[in-house]
Image (cartoon, rainbow, N blue to C red):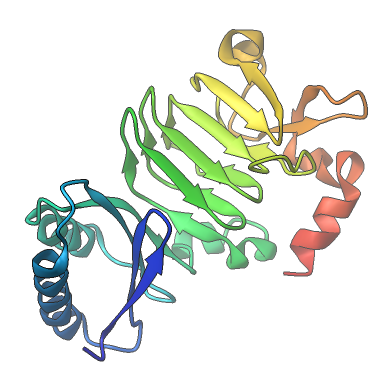
Amino acid sequence: MDNVVLKGRKDGYEIILKDTSAFDEIIIDLKALLQRLNQDESSQQKLALTVSTGHRLLTAEQQQQVTTIINDYSHFVLSTITADVIPVPVATTEPKWQGGMRLVTNVIRSGQVVEIDGDVLFIGTLHCGGTLRATGSIFIYSGSVTAGIIHAGYPNDSTQIIVGDFAAANQIRLGDTLEVSDAYADQITATSMAYVNDLHMINYSTLSKLAEQKPKLLRHLEAR
């Protein structure tokens, strides 16, 4: 199976779809891989599958095709589909340092927890009761629905930030610091930035003030 790569994780598997392969060939190998895993899996507990597409950005139709194939197997549940690229409309309007982010486009439902290593650009739907966690910062693309828990700097890195319209979120967390939605909803716009200040409290500004509020983080992002 040259077109898909399987990696074990503590909570399931990661399936890497090679970005140099034809999508039709990927689908053939993905079906064969899942069939083999399904036969080998004796546990009754569902295993989470994370799908990584590298430098290929799947279309909505392709994402649906992958999702449908995985959902055909009762042993597995799709956790997230991620890519190492961002859509052209975003790339042409956002700062160049966002190119190194992980793109998360899926729907996170109530009870689901999606964990990402690094910075995240979220273009999707986060339902009430769902959780999006990232070890780095989280950037919410305009139009995305975020009604659950957004946790940047997971588990305890309070130097990270959350950027975007998170007014509807149940809760935001930065490292080990948290705040509930009622405390900040009337302050939030699409360019808002949440960060932890010197008093170890969550404060709010705009992305344009990043250099002033978080100069070290800005240098880190620019160096990516």
